Length: 328
Ligand code: DGJ
Figure 1: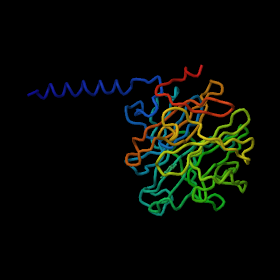
Figure 2 (figure 1 turned 90 degrees about the vertical axis):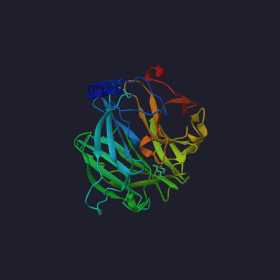
Figure 3 (figure 1 turned 30 degrees about the vertical axis):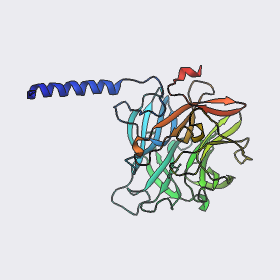
Figure 4 (figure 1 turned 180 degrees about the vertical axis):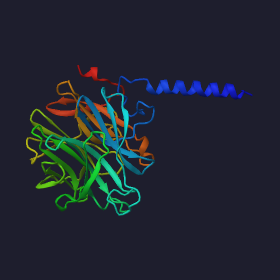
């Protein structure tokens, strides 16, 4: 029988070793593998997006339990491999079941941009009201003076009366920002210009195409817009498509599956969420996707892969271990 002293000693050794392991820094991406934060916990930021601000990347995403939505988490990183938890950027509201973001509501696909004119960080996300399944179909916005929050909820609604589910944001170099959203039971994909303070939709709201697509991830490259989307099959993966246009109001031309490699026909068993540029590396873009586990959403793995170009179209090739030097 180990004595109490030996047990305590073993426990201390265990805690020290696990702390060292937790802080061991990573130097590569391992798509589909569990991804730990700098404190050794699984990164909980699904359907996410990245904001680069003052030399630091911020990863915003859905905080999930086994299934339930628990707000929006934010992590920070200087190298894109190692992410420090910065806590809940936006929390559901307790004690007021009539609040738009009452605990029990669903917050999905949060994206954050910075507004130069107001000096505020603005977060848009897909909101479903508590107890109403996916029927509310609203866009919601929250603001903060500080990038990591806490964000203050502003309001939620259907943009220009349109249903709004999966979404992303696009910010142009001149500061104009757009909300791209799945509408009309996801049959339409729409794009609406946001007001100058980014807190409202303008009437400048256009149908992009009606092809029953969701999970939009957009990037501008060489003067053209490239939009990767999925089909609508709930949490189940399907084949991605890419739409290309010279102008945000279209016309949008569709090209089939940009994914390459094993399970490319089901987006590597995942669904698109965001595309972002690596700072300091010209034209180097990362594609982000979620490998949803609907009965264990918190542990849904992340798929991050580099975007390559083939005949002026983006492609994403599977790679189970890669790093930013592979871009050289
Ligand atoms: C697919 C969407 O892309 C996800 O964000 C989520 O809303 C699921 N559907 C829910 O079934």
